[in-house]
Image (cartoon, rainbow, N blue to C red; front, top):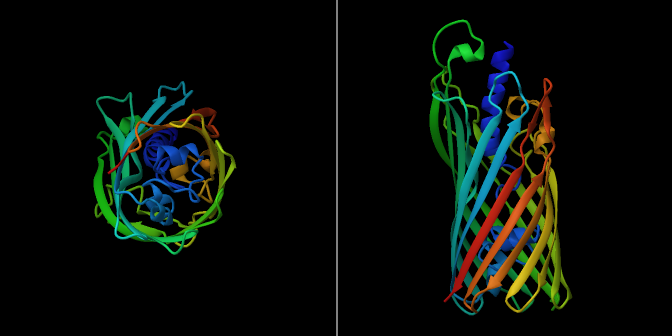
Amino acid sequence: MKKLVNLLMVAVFVLSAGSLSYARGPFITPGARATGYGTAFVSIADDLTAIYWNPAGLAYQKNTQMMLSSYYVSVNATSNDTSGYPTKYETSAIVPFLGFSTPLNKTTVMAFGVYVSGGGGGKVANIFPYQLEGEQSFMVYNVSVAKNINDKLSVGVGIEGIEMRDKLVCKIPYAMMGLPYPGVSNIDYSRGAFGFQGNIGIMYKPVEKLSTGFILRSGTYISLPKEPNSSNPSFVDGYTYPMTMELGASYNVLNPLTVAVAVAYNKYSWTSTDYNDTVQFRIGTEYKATKQLSLNLGFFTDPNIYKNSDSYTITNVDMYNMNYLCIGAGYDITTAMKVGLTYTHSFTQDVVNNGITYQYPVDMGRFDVSFKF
């Protein structure tokens, strides 16, 4: 029985590290510059990632423009298990973002975007020729419109279709699980489903140096098709996008230095009593070192959303209390072309179970290129 429990924990760890580490909390948020601000971007939102952070920010972007972005996520979890079970769990994902906007008239801007908000694949690296791997992904299709009410106030709305994909393959001999009969486990499924949510944002700039922003996301629950075969059980029935309210402000302290702060309230409990509602804190800075070069430093929290320890969290929900440090830089190659690069590292608690310590640092790199036409 102990072998069975340990191996099931490995399977759950793979699924958790491969998907929940990414597709939880605020999910993977787009934009190198936004991340460099410690994700305190709701009051700034001055590039095409505004379709996520605050669509009202699009109203101040008067050029036709396009933005390409990708970010690489890595979770190379390890354990100090000496009993012969796998000790390394590899997880990675390359996540894209593509956005386009154009003004409809002097006060109104429309934008379109396609991006991945979370997901990844995880596998046990050293059990060949057998398989143990999981994958989840969340593709978002966004349409947003923003309008200037006056020089100081803008509003924006967005509609998002979210496509969730879920896959798990577990083909391991029963003997490795400590079961007394021959054969190989045969869990193998791939499913998909859609959900929809709406966003509304406001941006207000009372004075030249101060900007404030607010966004409300409706949230949604994506229900996955049930597995008809009881011998082929699914680990996840669906996923909750929280209802989110976020408020922030940014201030140009000195001509080269801007400081931004934001607080987000994520309401998960509207779909499940298993989840906590969470509050996130974000803070970041940008320093204009030269006319072309800017430097960023930021920090944000990502609290655990699970109320109780269960099989999906390897008996320790504290592992999902994460704090992130972000450093980045941006460079204006020309007046029409900009690039950005940000590195993010998480500080997480180790998981200790049956005397075995699991470590799972999360590292993310983001790269942006934007063009104005």
